[in-house]
Image (cartoon, rainbow, N blue to C red; front, side, top):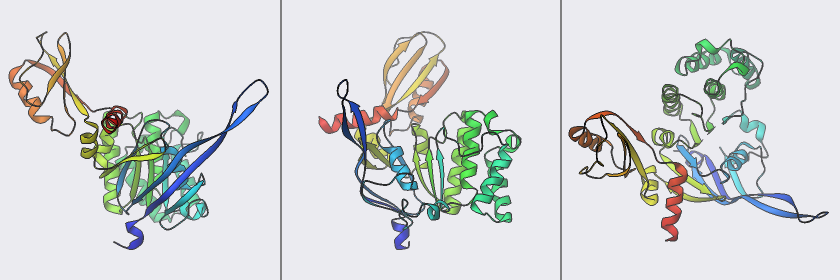
Amino acid sequence: MAANDAAFIELDAVEKVFTVRRRAGWMRRERHEVRAVDGISFQVPRGEVVGYIGPNGAGKSTTIKMLTGILVPSGGRLRVAGIDPSKERTRLARRMGVVFGQRTTLWWDLPLRDSYALVRRMYRIPDDRYRHNLERCVELLDLAELLEVPVRQLSLGQRMRGDIAAALLHDPDVLYLDEPTIGLDVISKVKVREFLREVNTEQNTTVLLTTHDLTDIEQLCQRVMVIDHGRVMYDGSLAGLHAVGESERTLVVDLERELPPIEGVPGARTVRVDGARQWLAFPAAASAAPIVAAVAAAYPLVDLSVREPDIEDVIAKMYAERSG
């Protein structure tokens, strides 16, 4: 691995301070400083997929906006592929792709195909490369029936898939994703995750992912960073985060009839009963398979599902553990 690949994304004591004015009386306003990012330092090697998570207002979006050059840091040092984003934003733009949650980069009144043609012209993508990338995105993201549809007529989930394709047409080295599976049904989520895994594997694309869906993190990321109040609170594996936060998954069991609380399942405990439905909690780092097998062997099942812990709950438990 080349030296610049070892620190493809590099932040050193990066800060972002906003000055806001607040009413302090009938005719008076006071200036206050808000530290959205407070001395963040980390490195991301080229080709790594990192989950960058935390509660709303933690500083995630501000960090990404500094990485793309939209915002200028108030302090510290920031580099992407050796480039200072705020000083060479145009140069860096050719090497990155961005999907900002519910803010589309597509042209609202144009069909999806025409939006892609404009992207090709903006990035000066060679014709053969453009055709290859477009065909691949259309196939893997199931966009064939949407190409002639104006963007404003697409559902949120359809537009998200369209935005992801647009962000990858020019073969970026780094991809910033903000809630890429929001509004998608289960099948579409699987398609998007498979597509992103393939892009990362085949093209060594570096991915920084913000999401509230822990399954996105579990399926895509080798590493998780938790940010809150503008600071990195955790940097490591998802299993390590679950261990620190003592988080739990939930097995939701629908029985044929109302029964007493389920007992005798190693590693799980019943936390709620509502008629024929029961909820069993078990450690998030543990496999659900033996728990499902034990319940199925002893009780008359109609249906069951596994619910992942909420990211905010994981973080709250992590803080409780540190302060205890």
